Length: 145
Image 1 (cartoon, helix red, strand yellow):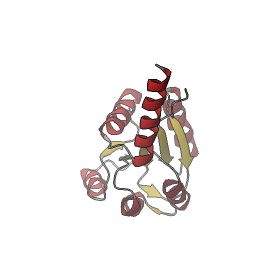
Image 2 (cartoon, rainbow, N blue to C red):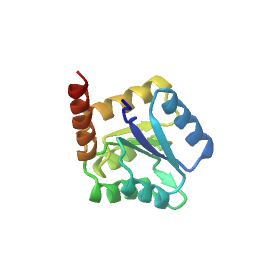
Image 3 (cartoon, rainbow, N blue to C red):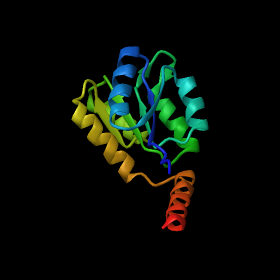
Image 4 (tube, helix red, strand yellow):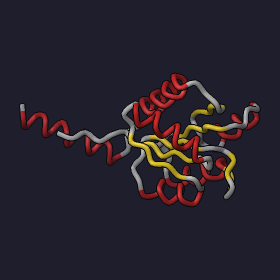
């Protein structure tokens, strides 16, 4: 039986940050898709079934805050974590008011990043597709047992 991995979509315009965070998350067992632009991230978010979005706040093609608000128009359940270099409290407040559940300031210790990711995913409501996958797994296990 193959279990679906927890899927994370990570947006950051700095390639080294994208690669480093993606590697950390992949080594922890997550499936990670990365993006460098808001437009590409929005397309992926609309198509994919993700368990978590991680967004930078300042990007060459726009604001992560605007992206967060756009995502909330079609996805109210998937948690959003901002991973940003903007350290002032006002940015955290803006991110949370735009629909995010958490805000971490770069750089962050790996254990803190992983703990935040795990907490947000655990607290999230399952999407219908994930629920259907869980039901299918339970039926398969019952049939096998």
